[in-house]
Length: 106
Length: 121
Image 1: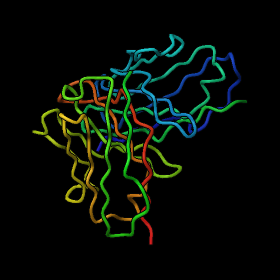
Image 2 (image 1 turned 90 degrees about the vertical axis):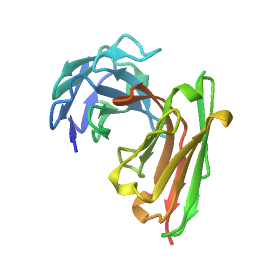
Image 3 (image 1 turned 135 degrees about the vertical axis):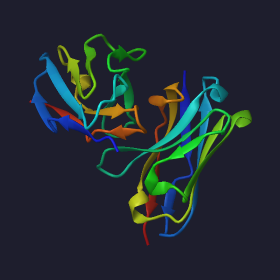
């Protein structure tokens, strides 16, 4: 099983700041990496797939980079609606998710 | 607009059975892989099953193999998950999810609102 490890578990930031979330795979997954956003009481929402392609309707302030085992999700100029939990997911060999990074208001 | 609506969740005793349904609309259902993903209370996401467009391929996470069966009815734009021999650790919100990508790997681009399955005596 490919284990996905996200860091940090929680990140306290202020609106308007830039933030970078990390995701590491236990073995190479190429570019088969997706990012999701989940707000309390809601279903996850796809943000990024193929490591760096924004899903339909996702604002340009969200960007993904990386390949192999190291990936990042960057959010520039945080908006109030961006405070949520973010998950990475690999789809190279079966499907596994990271444990999530909670973005909270500082 | 893609809409996925799950139903069928509820409280069931350990060892019992439950059948989840998902009604899809707003896209060509028969052209997509469909999946089930679950989330235990307060926990992260876990992929459960994938069902190919024509049901010729079905894949399951090891923990549900032999107990859960996914199926679909393309004429009714519906996805199903038959869950047998349920265990306490199956307690979760179950999401119906549309898969995109390719046969060798899917990302999940549209999610239902989920249905809660609670396994408890």
